[in-house]
Length: 436
Image (cartoon, rainbow, N blue to C red; front, side, top):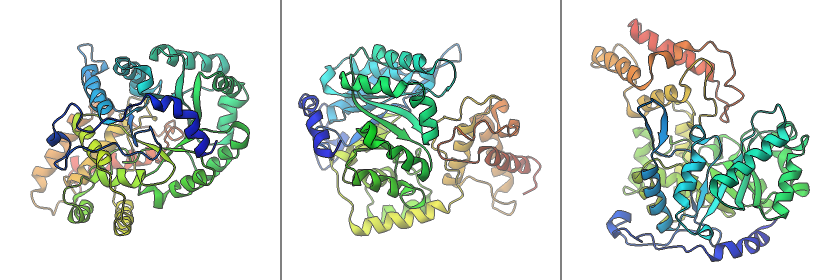
């Protein structure tokens, strides 16, 4: 389906989607000193900022279980809807299975034709009755959202033709989904891609047979240069397949750059956040339907709305600046974890994303203890170990990894997780033994 056909097919739904002024319900100061604006659109009727529902605010209950803070979610969705955000992306596996219900609860207070639902078939267990289990998961999503159709339905996290055949083709599940699309219960059918270039080409070669309505890829200014993002985007654009962008902030890493990297961006645009640079890069490409941002608090949402409601295209000078920033970031000693939690739960109870997040934050904040020669070493050593213990419970720390390798195939970023955990454990042990 080319872009013209895509727009024609969605025109009816888009007609009911009012793109509101960005200060609707808020003071101008809460949005920007420059005043109200209109949500930037690459495709008419689609806010270029999409709400990724994988990082909703959560809290720990009295039973020690984790729950979605529905009141905060409702407040954020209200603010987003008022500003013209109308694409909400979830999945059955997000937030320990709680994301779809939380998203549905927030959206159910609005007319069905005022937003687009995007969710996924997360049938990762390729065993048992794959066809019936897949149908049940799909129907469960319809039930949760209280709707007779899903606007954007994705085959979740594909990386190769072999995986597609195992999960969807050989069992007949893709044929079922194609019929649902014909019957109007799936308005747009696509997939999210997590893999290498070879797998991308294999799946894209199926376009003539299945006519993908859209494809979701990871794209940001670092992956554009140091992964296959540029290649994947160009291949989709050549075929006129609309692109949905995930991880524009690389799991939040580009939202808060190390001070040494952020300085040049601040020097050029003092008023702009690090996140705004990354979001502008992702959205500033023809054929991008929406850019998903997983926003955890109102502060994140307001900053992102300010970017998209007063959108400015990148200049050539700014593109060069981001290319240099990508070089510096690539060479910075960070673990490229996006916090997607696809590696979880760990069979041995290790909090893999929590460990990586703590490590990356210490590097970004400059609290990483590098040598016994540094000023205040003993104080900083004790502080670092205490902070690590608070951030990651003892039984969930890196020293409990036995390198079973189960997490390797689950990681979309292809991180050598056991090796990185071992490296962090060695570092922590060297601090304990004062061996730096």
